[in-house]
Image 1 (cartoon, rainbow, N blue to C red):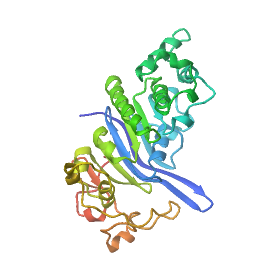
Image 2: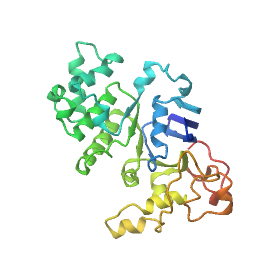
Image 3: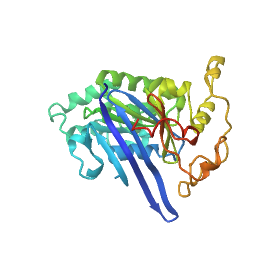
Image 4: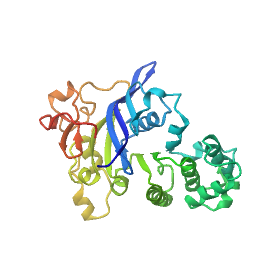
Length: 327
């Protein structure tokens, strides 16, 4: 049986505003197995990035629990031990803003090495060279500044910084969305190679479902702070169940008849995403759902298990198996 490295259990993260409370993450549960790539997918504002930021410790959860290697970590916000910060790292979406422009690459990579005492002062230069080579950058890049290198190279430096502490779990927050298409493939190939070489576990945050087909072992869909569906990747693309999932999959562009045949029947996107301050009662997706029923506007559905490792949150499957465990 594969070990579970991360468990997110009934996680909530609310932000009070003058207009009301934003329920950025609202009672979600999932798990990530050691060595796998778990894809967390959703439109902008779905709560996927906030979920990652709670896991890495940027935000304290409003409620719920996060467990890493069996240890509850959500209650120690602001007091996380260095050993935990060393094992859970994040790569942000925009390397242009996540790298200090006034520091050289050498200085940027030296910070985690010094803070976490990964390398002695004597071995610092050797470790930096090793990190740059690991992400396929020449050692002399350590003397450059972020402004002097391209977007893809900046992201490679950001990846090297995340790996400097020898982590076991890396959160990838849209790591390619700010890059040119020509560079995205190189970054993805690098991440997959590093995962194999270093036995890493990824929680991959993205809005690109087509990317998940080739990268993730499992996929979870978020909408307005809630999870809609979780399934193994093959099952997810062959047998999508939630109307929102079908809508997203039917919108993926294809280049061949074979790919077109695999897509769900075209489902037109209806209406706009509601304001996160004023989420509709009942199922949050019912105002856009082509298959809504009267109960959808009143009762919020719960996650149910419809197959091995496949759970969905929709009234269409209310008669399925009992409420699903943490997927």
